[in-house]
Length: 354
Ligand code: CP3
Image (cartoon, rainbow, N blue to C red; front, top):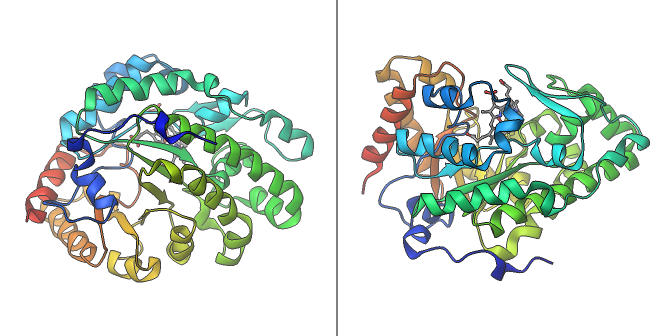
C-alpha cells in the first residue's frame, strides 16, 4: 500500500494552476494547453542536446531529462510539462532486451509469445528506475507553479510492443494471444499492470502533479474485447494511484467507441483524438470527467489561418466538457514548425481568456 504522505505537498500556486484546475473541472481564467510529444524533434535545442546520445540513454540521465523536459515549457509557454522518458523505460529497467530505433520506435530482441517468455517481466523495484525519481524531483524544483505530468504506457500498449517485437499496424499477434490464449494474456497483463503501478507511484511520490496512462493502441480492439481483456487492468492501475489525489488522464488513439469505458476505468480526464469532436466525446464519456484534446496534429502543416480556424472549433466544442485541457489529438509530428506551436499556445490562451 502506498503512503500518500510520501508525495510532497504542492504549493497553493501549483494547486491553483489552470491545468490542475481544469483537471478537477473547476473554473479557469483561460484554457490550459500542453502538447503530447512537446519535447523532441520539432525543437532544434532538443536535437542539439540529444546529439550522439541514444534515446534510452538520454532517459537515464537526469540532467538531460530535466533540460529536455523544460525546453517546450520555456519555448511554447505551455501550462504543463511532461516528463521526458518513454513508455518502454520500466520494461528496460526490469531487464527486457529492447531498443528505441530512431524513426521506427521500440524494438524487442526476444518477443514474448509463450509462457516461458513471461519470466523476463519480474516486478519493478523503485530502485530499478532511481534516475526517473531523481529527474522528477529535479524538475519539480525547477518548475515552480507549472505542473509536471508523469506517465506510463498502459498494459495493452506495452503488450503490443512485447508480443509483436516492434511497432505494428494490425497488432495481429497481440490480438491472437488475447483471443486465443486468455490465460496467458491475463498473466502477461497482470505483470504489466504491477510494473505500471510501481512506475506511476514512484513518479507521484517524487512530485509529479498528474499522471497520464497512454493506451495509444487500444483502439485496435472492439469494445467487447476492451471490456473483458483490457479495462480490468487499466482500472486496477487507476485504483492503485487514486489515494494520492493527483489527476489521472487516460489517452488512446482511435478510441471513439471506447471513450465511455476509458472513463469508466477510473480516469479523471479522458484524452480524445481528432476523430471525435469534443461535444460528442463529452456525451460519450458522461458527467464527472474532464476532456483533453483534440486538434489534429496534421493541422500544424497548414497556413496559420487554418490552424486558427480549427483551434477555434476545438475550443468551442470543448465548452461542452466539464473541464477542457487543450492538446493535439496525438503527438506533435516530426517536421512541425515550433513557431506554430508557440503561436497556437498564445492563441488558445487569448481566445479562452475570461
Ligand atoms: O514530450 C513528450 O511527450 C514526453 C516524452 C515521451 C516520449 N515518448 C519521448 C520519445 C512520451 C510521453 C512518450 C510516450 C510513448 N512512447 C508512447 C505513447 C504516446 C504516443 O505517442 O502514443 C508510445 C507509443 C511510445 C513508443 C515510442 N517511442 C514510439 C512510437 C517512438 C517514436 C519512434 C520515432 O522515432 O518515430 C518512440 C521514441 C521516442 N519517444 C522519441 C521521443 C522524443 C523519439 C526518439 C528520438 O528522437 O530519438
